[in-house]
Structures are given as C-alpha cells and as structure tokens.
Length: 354
Image 1 (cartoon, rainbow, N blue to C red):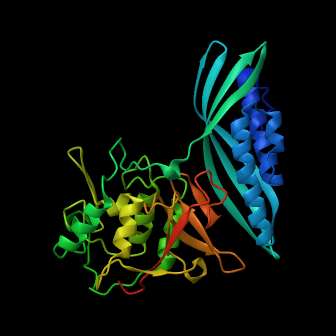
Image 2 (cartoon, rainbow, N blue to C red; image 1 turned 180 degrees about the vertical axis):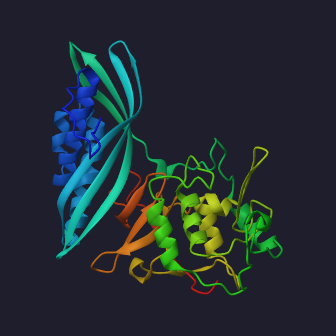
C-alpha cells in the first residue's frame, strides 16, 4: 500500500475496500499526531474500537505532556499482510509501521514501533466501510515456541525445578562453534554489544535462531547472549537459561529463554555466577542492556520482555522489543493496547561480572 522510498512512481489510485484501508491509515497517522481519536471516526463505524483507540491516544498524550515531549513528525505506513474477500465483505490483517520524531526539552530522538490489526470491511449500499477492528495484542499472548503450545501450567513447577536442579554447565553445543575458545569463569557483560544486537534485529528475525510466534523473550535472550552472557545449559527445559535449536523436529531451549514469566523467575533467582540480575526499584536505576518485564493484569504472571537501548533527557529508559517490533519506545508501554491500570513492572539490572 505505502510506496517505498527511492523509485518514483505515479500515484496509484486505489478502489474498493483497499481505498478505505488506505484512508484509514492516513487517519491513524493524524490521530497519532493529535493524540486524539476524532480523526478515526471519519474512517470507521466501530464505536468500540474508536473508544479503545481514543483512550490509548489520550493517555499517551498526557504522558508526553508530563515528559515535556512533543511530536515533531509522525509517519504511519500500512502493509497488508493478509487479505480475503468474499462478495461484499473483506477481512484484512494490517501492519501499521509508526515512526515518531520527538522533541523532549530540546533533545530530539526517533521512536519506532509496529502495530497489527484485524480489519473487517463491508460494502453497504455501494460504499465500502470499516465495520470492525480488533488490535492484535501479541504482547499478551501466553504461547511460546514457533508452533501452538500450551503455556506453563503452574509457574511454581519452574521455581521448584530451580531449587532441585543440579549445577548447570555454562556452554552449549560447543562443537558446532569454529575456533571456539572457552570463556573465563568470570565473564563480563558487554552492554554495548547487547544494545548493538538489539538495534540490528529489532524488526526482523536473526536466521541463526528459531523465530517464535511470540518472539519477545527469545529476542531478549538473544540480546543478552550477544552481550556475552553465558548460557546455563541443564538439558531440562524447566531449568537453566539456554538455547540449542531444533534436532529432528524436537525443540531444544529452556522456558527461561523463550517465556517472559520463566525469564522473570530465572533472573529473580540467586546464583554465584553466570547470567544473574538485581531487581531495582525504579526504571531510572537501569542501565543499557538491562531488562524490563511486564505483567499486564497485575496477577503475578509476566507476559512481555524488553531491553533498555537508550535513555531520554530525564534518564528514563527507552526500550527495544520484538513480536510487536519496537525501537527506542518509552519504557512504560502506555501507548500499547496491552497496558492496563493494573500493569506491574520488574526492573532487572544485569550483573556486570557474570
């Protein structure tokens, strides 16, 4: 739908439901600029989504006002990921790519994120209209892995396994690495390398790893490993922190590598060496390469993970994430449909000596 920059082409006249989607994207962009859902009313008849979107935009605008931050520029590009049309109806899976330039007290930075929505369009009396929209709130989904799995039935089983496990080994599949030199027992966490990896792979999957359907914690684990955090291989999915890939169709990775709540449990544990972290009380106590996990419902189960990749002028973290790809997004996620008034956070400062 949106033209890529570079090659100049004559404007394409869209017709039917595609024109309606294109107009909707323009109104989304305007609503993001104004932090007001009013422009969306011109493009859709779904009152429920209009109210939901308006609440999100208003709270984001209030947050930016408190931060003394203002949008200098906002650009939204839409991509049709999937579409099906039957008679007078069409169903669309839409990706909106947002790039916002913010000026905060004289300092300018760029924030990027992707949102996904399911959009239903109908031809009513010869006129196509958007009749329903459902945001795809992937940050909330409990599944893990690249195929459909059941979530952990009881996180206490994971915590019990942590207590019962024997000592793990810090490396995994050593034989597949060429010219491999074992790391010293006391490794250093390279925050710059973790952040560089996070910025390189925030919107696409590294082909060296399995891409999970819900990829946020897999991505964070990759960032930590890129920062030279040593894997803790136990051979048991319930313990350690490790990734091996697939072998004859079988998955080989720990829950803590791929599941946010399991990563929370692992980082909360006490250990003398290897990947470990200290829980801090406030986001401004974090450093580059540190981790935030999110409990949207306030029920003690964490569903999303991010990594700190920059700071604003107030010293507050800006984070990267995957599944819902984000780069230099403000840490609190109030601009997400996943956020609720019950949202709880845990702030993990990764140890420098591992």
